[in-house]
Amino acid sequence: MKTDTADQHWNDEWAAIAPESKWRIPEADVTRWAATLAPGARVLDLGAGVGRHALYLAEQGFEVTALDAAAEGLAAIRAAGKVSTVEARMDDLPFETGAFDHVLSWNVIYHGDEDVLLRTIAEIRRVLRPGGSYLGTMLSKRRLPHEQAKYPGREISRNAWVFDAPDTDKIHPHYFCSAAELLALFSGFECLWLEDREHQTPGSWHWHLKMERL
Image 1 (tube, rainbow, N blue to C red):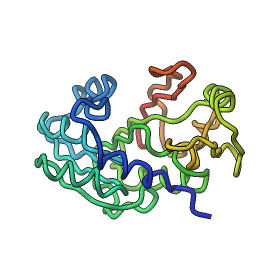
Image 2: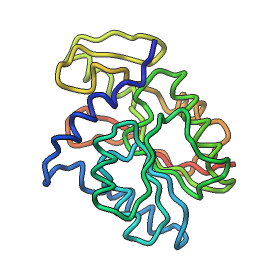
Image 3: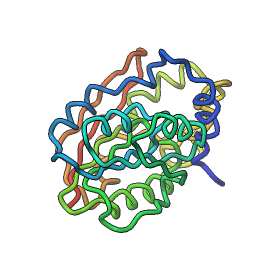
């Protein structure tokens, strides 16, 4: 069964996104990370949405590629210019080995089951040069009880859940993990930073992580 289907929801969201949407504003963690990168570095924004991070990074002088499976988001990025866009799946990246100095993937790679996630992480590792950094987020298991309290849900495979939550992306599989499980998933990486953080909505716990490709 295909589980990386959330781009269907987000493609519709990007088609109707408002100018003032929060999805147009770069995250503070990303801007801080960008300030540490070498000028002109090659950066992949994996799951770029409408380009809030890809466009910001391009403005800072980086060589940016924005990848997404949702065509509407990529169209918005192309309209803004400055960034190369690629429509592809996150677990099958159409790039050469070591093609990027850094990879960013914000609120993306947990959309699927563990098989999809492991393939995606393996692809991130492959396209990163040794010593390159990965910045991203994952869903914390601390969040799961809050979702279960709001919506009926079922575990379709280990740690992968779908919820009866119409008009949200939660009808598509989401992967929730503990810190130990997260570190095991990222084989071939050294963990430089890991924090379980609650976002704007109460109970919306996400792991924020920075990894170095070994």
